[in-house]
Image 1: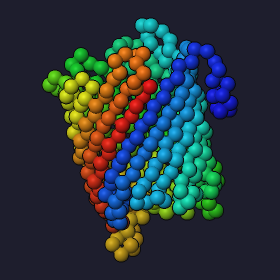
Image 2: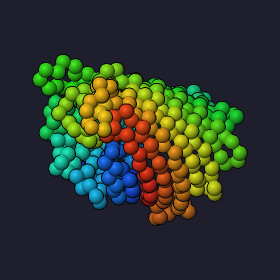
Image 3: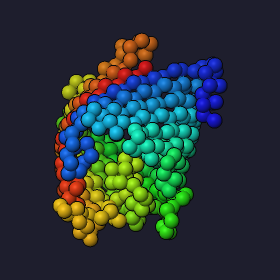
Length: 357
């Protein structure tokens, strides 16, 4: 459906073409975040090409490829076609509606080919801005992830989210959101009765202006997974479980603090600290001899870091030159775990460049 829509709209009038290219290089001292502590230097390249049609709809394609120099078994490529409507209503009370239909696929190297999947999805979001300083949004998203070679992992994921944000005259931004998710496995292994996962997330954010061109950012997220994840009941390795994603996998708390300083227009630097606890119900913890301890895995993650970014804008909207966004980031990640294979740490460095037309 989406490819046909994309082809039909190529000849439509009043279409504005937009595109972006993003390249990121990353060095990590611990690519698997486990006791093996194997380093890698990788690259992630992304591209997007789309068409905007008056007054409020768009179609497009995004793709990305991940390449690892030391662990080619982790190489993968991702593709997505999408079409969405985004009408805006009202003047004093601004209301916008977004409806997106998408089809994506992930292809992995041979070692992880069991995790190759096709994922159609639908998202709906409604935003209301009753005043210039107040915004509210509600959204729903449903997707079906179909694995080519792991049918017992096939699942329907559904998410509902509500958020509220306010800009106060004291240079303060306050926001909060809550999200509820459910996963239904369409075909569970023999002998497994539980075919559903549930997860709740509640978050709060405070942004406070400090001295000129500087701000403080505080964030907190509470995450609750109701029961062990169904992924832990599949015949997947620990590395494969991590590669599928972390939704419905653990409960815990995440707190972060950051200070951002604008250096010159378009350029800024940020220092941050993240502290996160993760409790993996149903994931056994192991000692140094790889014997089960009888406990579930629990991790405490502490990650300080810094980021610098620079946005170079074209002289005018009619300029043939793109907007260029450059950034560099360093993070140290300490993972204190009661499961010996995951009691580890890592140094991570990222350098990225993005061009947008």
